[in-house]
Length: 225
Image (cartoon, rainbow, N blue to C red; front, top):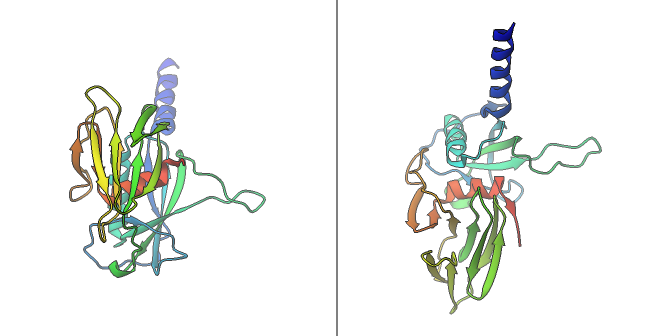
């Protein structure tokens, strides 16, 4: 009897804390060798719908989860995704829930991806509250949040972790400069598990992220002004 209860507890624990990524509703596949997986708004970007991914269960290992999603997306030749909210009983949409969510997968021609030149996304650590300085502005980040700023021509921006031995970076607008993503962390960041360098630069506890992984984080993290 005790052995049966113990086995049941292990099973329930796995159900509660396990993470499962399922490829649903495969409508079609697309043959391409793109290594990217960018977030899009399908209402404003010309795209070809391919399939749906369902994520069940929560894990704070974002890189591992994205690796699982990326692998499933590449099975159908997707290079883009969007968040698909669940509908409420009254016909509205539910807020994002990290325990259970769906992503739609698409193929987008590289020329059709929208550009966000001279835009910077600042992404918090998933584990702890932090205060980051942007020039003279102090921004308090709750865990698993992010914000974005537009870089004005002729202005230099200093982003700092405000620690005695912390890190700082300087940013400025450049002609046709692609969007940039930076994450703050006080822990080591492993190499990208899903393809080419997904985490490609680290300056102390400020890490520059590859766009695909960063745009996944801006989907599962909460935006703050």
